[in-house]
Amino acid sequence: MMDGLADWLRFALALIGPARQRSLLAAFGLPGNIFAQSRSHLASIVGHEATDALLKGPDPVALEAALAWAGEEGNHLLTLADATYPQSLLEIADPPLILYVKGNPTLFARPSLAMVGSRTPTAQGEANAKAFAESLSAAGLVIVSGLAQGIDAAAHRGALAVEDGSTIAVIGTGIDRIYPARNAALAREIAARGAILSEFPLGTPPARWNFPRRNRLIAGLSLGVLVVEATQESGSLITARIAADTGREVFAIPGSIHTPQARGCHRLIREGAKLVETAEDVFEELRGRIGGGLPRHVEMPRHASPRPYQPPPAVSQPLPVVVPTHLVPEAVQVLEALGNEARNIDTLALATGLTIEALHAHLLTLELEGLATRQTGGGFLRLYTTRVA
Image: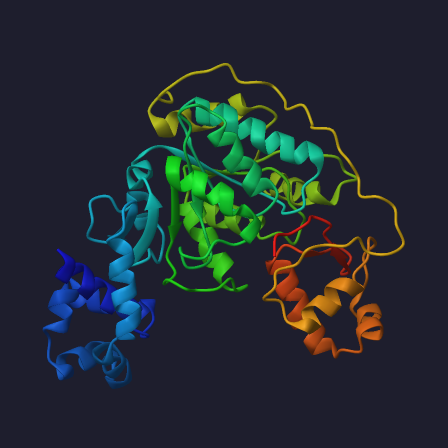
């Protein structure tokens, strides 16, 4: 069994690209059969360069680390050949060869709904996400989201608020790296009562291009996607479009016309997403896909009561914040230059003395760390949430 898993890992970690991997699987079947082929036979399918990369294999240390990780309690490496591999992912164009799972992989066989949205939601949006997740989880749906700040975290917490509720977090890093770090405690609870899933090798850091790939798995795992709040530039719209392209339902909650976080939802509704006001609206649309009903039925609340909103104090200087110690000094300098009002790139260049290129790099780092956010008008705003170093 471990020999077969080692072959899958060796094959998945080889730097030959998913298209060539699929070609080899189609031609020869399981990775063990692929590695039994002659060099010339492999080259006839994927070319000499890819064949050399395949036979060279991954870093042996990385391979051993993955096998050791899989041997720990609660950890699972699911290959395309495993019976517990999520069957719904086989419907997407490029299902991962291997999934790293911490928690309960049997959840993938249960009906699920994805919930996504803004990392900087309104108080009402966050309350809506938690209430919808709680109601639908209580009815038997597994809630799928991306472990990001804001709507994602609220959806996970809503599902976990139900006594026997479950949730799946799909992450854009290696499964041994929780991002953002402030969600570490939430991730531990999800692993204990649900599942965390990643397609990325151990040690993979957060990077902008990882998250669109993560989004296709969120959509692929689910019967539909509910967008709670999203700006027009939000990655949540990518998830919704992937869902629509793969035949999933797309739902959106409307909001105030004066709220930027509602504009992405309004755009989806104009494009054909189903407008929902209650959890029952979602349930009614999914009824046919689940064969008539969810495993449990509960009373669905018509709306969520917003938690009290405490705006940040009106100060002229940024509030002190504990930042991760791994940030480079220039990134900290950029963070300190951000204020309680959005600042554009030119203003930040004058304040820091950094080049535009360097600023964009450091601002991306701060966005990924959850310390800053890009505003609709193009400016950048510092988030005032205290971080643990």
